[in-house]
Amino acid sequence: MNYLLRGIGVLATVGTLSLLAFSLPSGGEARGDGGDDLMPRLAHKNWQQECASCHLAYSPALLPRASWQRVMGGLEQHFGENASLDPATQADILRFLEANAADSGTSRMGDKVMQRMDRNTAPLRITETRWFVKKHDEVPRATWTRKSVGSAANCAACHRQAEKGVFDEDTVRIPK
Ligand code: HEC
Ligand code: HEC
Picture (cartoon, rainbow, N blue to C red):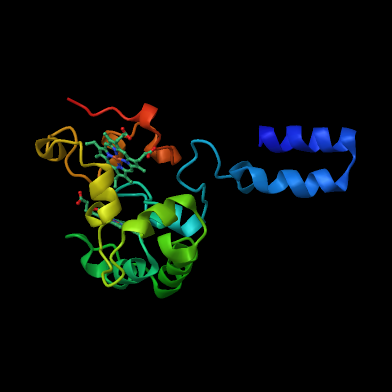
Protein backbone atom coordinates (compact mmCIF):
# COMPACT_ATOMS: atom_id res chain seq x y z
CA MET A 1 0.00 0.00 0.00
CA ASN A 2 2.84 2.35 0.83
CA TYR A 3 4.27 1.79 -2.60
CA LEU A 4 0.95 2.44 -4.22
CA LEU A 5 0.43 5.69 -2.35
CA ARG A 6 3.96 6.81 -3.05
CA GLY A 7 3.44 5.89 -6.68
CA ILE A 8 0.30 7.95 -6.88
CA GLY A 9 2.11 10.87 -5.25
CA VAL A 10 4.87 10.70 -7.83
CA LEU A 11 2.35 10.42 -10.65
CA ALA A 12 0.41 13.41 -9.40
CA THR A 13 3.58 15.51 -9.45
CA VAL A 14 4.80 14.33 -12.79
CA GLY A 15 1.32 14.19 -14.22
CA THR A 16 1.93 11.96 -17.20
CA LEU A 17 -0.42 9.20 -18.21
CA SER A 18 2.28 7.25 -19.95
CA LEU A 19 4.01 6.84 -16.60
CA LEU A 20 0.83 5.36 -15.14
CA ALA A 21 0.72 2.64 -17.76
CA PHE A 22 4.37 1.98 -17.14
CA SER A 23 4.33 1.81 -13.37
CA LEU A 24 1.21 -0.21 -12.54
CA PRO A 25 2.29 -3.69 -13.65
CA SER A 26 5.64 -3.45 -11.91
CA GLY A 27 4.69 -4.70 -8.46
CA GLY A 28 2.42 -7.22 -6.78
CA GLU A 29 1.76 -4.45 -4.26
CA ALA A 30 -1.08 -3.11 -6.34
CA ARG A 31 -2.89 -6.45 -5.97
CA GLY A 32 -2.27 -6.50 -2.26
CA ASP A 33 -0.30 -9.75 -2.26
CA GLY A 34 3.18 -8.35 -2.57
CA GLY A 35 6.04 -8.56 -0.15
CA ASP A 36 5.76 -11.21 2.54
CA ASP A 37 1.98 -11.46 2.40
CA LEU A 38 1.78 -15.03 1.17
CA MET A 39 -1.67 -15.95 2.41
CA PRO A 40 -4.53 -13.92 0.94
CA ARG A 41 -6.38 -11.73 3.49
CA LEU A 42 -9.96 -12.92 3.45
CA ALA A 43 -13.03 -12.20 5.50
CA HIS A 44 -16.30 -14.11 5.43
CA LYS A 45 -18.73 -14.10 8.33
CA ASN A 46 -20.07 -17.68 8.22
CA TRP A 47 -16.66 -19.15 7.49
CA GLN A 48 -15.03 -17.31 10.38
CA GLN A 49 -17.92 -18.20 12.67
CA GLU A 50 -18.32 -21.88 11.77
CA CYS A 51 -14.87 -23.04 10.68
CA ALA A 52 -12.68 -21.51 13.35
CA SER A 53 -14.14 -22.97 16.54
CA CYS A 54 -12.20 -26.26 16.59
CA HIS A 55 -9.13 -25.16 14.62
CA LEU A 56 -8.08 -22.03 12.80
CA ALA A 57 -10.00 -21.10 9.69
CA TYR A 58 -7.78 -22.75 7.08
CA SER A 59 -7.31 -20.51 4.08
CA PRO A 60 -9.35 -21.59 1.04
CA ALA A 61 -6.16 -21.05 -1.00
CA LEU A 62 -4.65 -24.20 0.52
CA LEU A 63 -6.95 -26.69 -1.24
CA PRO A 64 -8.54 -26.91 -4.70
CA ARG A 65 -12.28 -26.62 -5.29
CA ALA A 66 -12.75 -30.39 -5.56
CA SER A 67 -11.28 -30.80 -2.10
CA TRP A 68 -13.54 -28.16 -0.55
CA GLN A 69 -16.54 -29.84 -2.14
CA ARG A 70 -15.53 -33.09 -0.44
CA VAL A 71 -14.87 -31.40 2.90
CA MET A 72 -18.18 -29.52 2.85
CA GLY A 73 -20.08 -32.57 1.63
CA GLY A 74 -18.99 -34.64 4.60
CA LEU A 75 -19.34 -32.37 7.62
CA GLU A 76 -21.39 -34.92 9.60
CA GLN A 77 -18.30 -37.10 9.73
CA HIS A 78 -15.55 -34.52 9.78
CA PHE A 79 -12.33 -36.10 11.06
CA GLY A 80 -14.18 -37.81 13.86
CA GLU A 81 -16.37 -34.79 14.66
CA ASN A 82 -19.86 -33.80 13.69
CA ALA A 83 -19.42 -30.34 12.15
CA SER A 84 -22.70 -30.27 10.23
CA LEU A 85 -24.43 -27.00 9.38
CA ASP A 86 -27.81 -25.93 8.09
CA PRO A 87 -27.97 -26.23 4.28
CA ALA A 88 -27.98 -22.48 3.60
CA THR A 89 -24.90 -21.81 5.73
CA GLN A 90 -23.14 -24.82 4.27
CA ALA A 91 -23.83 -23.63 0.70
CA ASP A 92 -22.74 -20.10 1.54
CA ILE A 93 -19.41 -21.26 2.99
CA LEU A 94 -18.79 -23.61 0.07
CA ARG A 95 -19.33 -20.75 -2.39
CA PHE A 96 -16.76 -18.67 -0.53
CA LEU A 97 -14.25 -21.55 -0.38
CA GLU A 98 -14.66 -22.31 -4.10
CA ALA A 99 -14.28 -18.67 -5.12
CA ASN A 100 -10.95 -18.45 -3.27
CA ALA A 101 -9.71 -22.03 -3.71
CA ALA A 102 -6.17 -22.90 -4.75
CA ASP A 103 -7.28 -23.40 -8.36
CA SER A 104 -9.39 -20.23 -8.52
CA GLY A 105 -6.42 -18.21 -9.76
CA THR A 106 -6.97 -15.56 -7.11
CA SER A 107 -3.81 -15.90 -4.99
CA ARG A 108 -0.09 -16.54 -5.14
CA MET A 109 -0.55 -19.07 -2.34
CA GLY A 110 -3.06 -21.02 -4.43
CA ASP A 111 -0.76 -21.00 -7.45
CA LYS A 112 1.99 -22.53 -5.32
CA VAL A 113 -0.28 -25.27 -4.03
CA MET A 114 -1.48 -26.07 -7.56
CA GLN A 115 2.05 -26.25 -8.97
CA ARG A 116 2.52 -29.46 -7.06
CA MET A 117 -1.03 -30.79 -7.03
CA ASP A 118 -1.84 -34.08 -8.69
CA ARG A 119 -4.93 -32.98 -10.64
CA ASN A 120 -6.53 -36.41 -10.32
CA THR A 121 -6.75 -36.21 -6.57
CA ALA A 122 -8.78 -34.09 -4.18
CA PRO A 123 -7.15 -34.50 -0.77
CA LEU A 124 -9.31 -33.87 2.29
CA ARG A 125 -6.31 -32.59 4.16
CA ILE A 126 -4.07 -29.59 3.48
CA THR A 127 -1.37 -31.51 5.30
CA GLU A 128 -1.53 -34.25 2.66
CA THR A 129 -0.99 -31.97 -0.33
CA ARG A 130 2.37 -32.22 -2.03
CA TRP A 131 2.90 -28.52 -1.46
CA PHE A 132 2.53 -28.93 2.30
CA VAL A 133 4.72 -32.02 2.49
CA LYS A 134 7.48 -30.37 0.45
CA LYS A 135 7.32 -27.08 2.35
CA HIS A 136 7.65 -28.95 5.64
CA ASP A 137 10.15 -31.63 4.64
CA GLU A 138 12.74 -30.25 7.03
CA VAL A 139 10.51 -30.73 10.03
CA PRO A 140 11.54 -34.01 11.69
CA ARG A 141 8.82 -36.66 11.66
CA ALA A 142 8.67 -37.00 15.45
CA THR A 143 7.96 -33.27 15.80
CA TRP A 144 4.45 -33.55 14.40
CA THR A 145 3.19 -35.78 17.18
CA ARG A 146 4.87 -33.90 20.02
CA LYS A 147 2.40 -33.04 22.78
CA SER A 148 2.94 -29.33 22.21
CA VAL A 149 2.06 -29.72 18.53
CA GLY A 150 -0.53 -32.50 18.45
CA SER A 151 -0.80 -32.81 14.69
CA ALA A 152 0.38 -31.16 11.51
CA ALA A 153 -3.08 -29.59 11.23
CA ASN A 154 -2.31 -27.49 14.32
CA CYS A 155 -0.62 -24.77 12.27
CA ALA A 156 -0.66 -22.25 15.12
CA ALA A 157 1.59 -24.42 17.29
CA CYS A 158 4.54 -23.35 15.11
CA HIS A 159 3.22 -20.43 13.07
CA ARG A 160 2.81 -17.98 15.92
CA GLN A 161 0.74 -15.54 13.87
CA ALA A 162 -1.32 -18.11 11.97
CA GLU A 163 -4.57 -16.72 13.37
CA LYS A 164 -3.79 -13.48 11.57
CA GLY A 165 -2.99 -15.34 8.36
CA VAL A 166 0.75 -14.71 8.71
CA PHE A 167 3.01 -17.68 7.90
CA ASP A 168 6.31 -15.93 7.12
CA GLU A 169 9.51 -17.74 8.02
CA ASP A 170 10.40 -15.29 10.77
CA THR A 171 7.18 -16.03 12.66
CA VAL A 172 7.82 -19.80 12.83
CA ARG A 173 8.97 -21.38 16.07
CA ILE A 174 8.67 -25.10 16.71
CA PRO A 175 7.69 -25.65 20.36
CA LYS A 176 9.71 -27.97 22.59
C1 HEC B 1 -16.52 -29.65 15.76
C2 HEC B 1 -15.15 -29.28 15.46
C3 HEC B 1 -14.85 -28.85 14.03
C4 HEC B 1 -15.47 -27.88 13.27
C5 HEC B 1 -16.67 -27.03 13.64
C6 HEC B 1 -14.76 -27.83 12.00
N1 HEC B 1 -13.72 -28.72 12.02
FE1 HEC B 1 -12.38 -29.00 10.52
N2 HEC B 1 -11.41 -30.39 11.66
C7 HEC B 1 -11.78 -30.81 12.93
C8 HEC B 1 -10.85 -31.81 13.40
C9 HEC B 1 -10.91 -32.53 14.74
C10 HEC B 1 -9.88 -31.97 12.38
C11 HEC B 1 -8.66 -32.89 12.41
C12 HEC B 1 -7.51 -32.14 13.05
C13 HEC B 1 -6.24 -32.96 13.17
O1 HEC B 1 -6.01 -33.86 12.37
O2 HEC B 1 -5.44 -32.64 14.07
C14 HEC B 1 -10.27 -31.05 11.31
C15 HEC B 1 -9.57 -30.92 10.13
C16 HEC B 1 -9.93 -30.12 9.07
C17 HEC B 1 -9.21 -30.04 7.81
C18 HEC B 1 -7.94 -30.81 7.46
C19 HEC B 1 -6.70 -30.21 8.12
C20 HEC B 1 -5.45 -30.91 7.65
O3 HEC B 1 -5.04 -31.90 8.27
O4 HEC B 1 -4.88 -30.46 6.65
C21 HEC B 1 -9.88 -29.16 7.02
C22 HEC B 1 -9.52 -28.75 5.60
C23 HEC B 1 -11.02 -28.67 7.79
N3 HEC B 1 -11.01 -29.27 9.03
C24 HEC B 1 -11.94 -27.75 7.32
C25 HEC B 1 -13.04 -27.30 8.07
C26 HEC B 1 -14.03 -26.39 7.57
C27 HEC B 1 -14.05 -25.79 6.17
C28 HEC B 1 -14.92 -26.16 8.58
C29 HEC B 1 -16.14 -25.29 8.57
C30 HEC B 1 -17.19 -25.67 7.65
C31 HEC B 1 -14.48 -26.96 9.72
N4 HEC B 1 -13.34 -27.63 9.37
C32 HEC B 1 -15.12 -27.01 10.96
C33 HEC B 1 -12.85 -30.33 13.65
C34 HEC B 1 -13.75 -29.36 13.23
C1 HEC C 1 5.69 -28.45 13.68
C2 HEC C 1 5.64 -27.07 13.26
C3 HEC C 1 4.74 -26.66 12.10
C4 HEC C 1 3.40 -26.89 11.93
C5 HEC C 1 2.45 -27.60 12.86
C6 HEC C 1 3.04 -26.28 10.66
N1 HEC C 1 4.13 -25.70 10.09
FE1 HEC C 1 4.17 -24.61 8.38
N2 HEC C 1 6.18 -24.41 8.53
C7 HEC C 1 6.96 -24.89 9.56
C8 HEC C 1 8.35 -24.69 9.24
C9 HEC C 1 9.55 -25.07 10.12
C10 HEC C 1 8.39 -24.06 7.97
C11 HEC C 1 9.58 -23.66 7.15
C12 HEC C 1 9.98 -22.25 7.39
C13 HEC C 1 11.02 -21.93 6.37
O1 HEC C 1 10.62 -21.58 5.26
O2 HEC C 1 12.18 -22.07 6.69
C14 HEC C 1 6.99 -23.89 7.55
C15 HEC C 1 6.60 -23.27 6.38
C16 HEC C 1 5.28 -22.97 6.05
C17 HEC C 1 4.86 -22.09 4.99
C18 HEC C 1 5.76 -21.38 4.02
C19 HEC C 1 6.09 -19.97 4.47
C20 HEC C 1 6.90 -19.27 3.41
O3 HEC C 1 7.20 -18.10 3.64
O4 HEC C 1 7.19 -19.84 2.37
C21 HEC C 1 3.50 -22.05 5.01
C22 HEC C 1 2.58 -21.25 4.12
C23 HEC C 1 3.06 -22.92 6.07
N3 HEC C 1 4.17 -23.45 6.69
C24 HEC C 1 1.75 -23.18 6.38
C25 HEC C 1 1.33 -24.09 7.35
C26 HEC C 1 -0.05 -24.49 7.57
C27 HEC C 1 -1.22 -23.95 6.77
C28 HEC C 1 -0.04 -25.38 8.60
C29 HEC C 1 -1.21 -26.10 9.20
C30 HEC C 1 -2.11 -26.79 8.28
C31 HEC C 1 1.34 -25.51 9.04
N4 HEC C 1 2.14 -24.75 8.25
C32 HEC C 1 1.77 -26.30 10.11
C33 HEC C 1 6.49 -25.48 10.72
C34 HEC C 1 5.20 -25.91 10.93
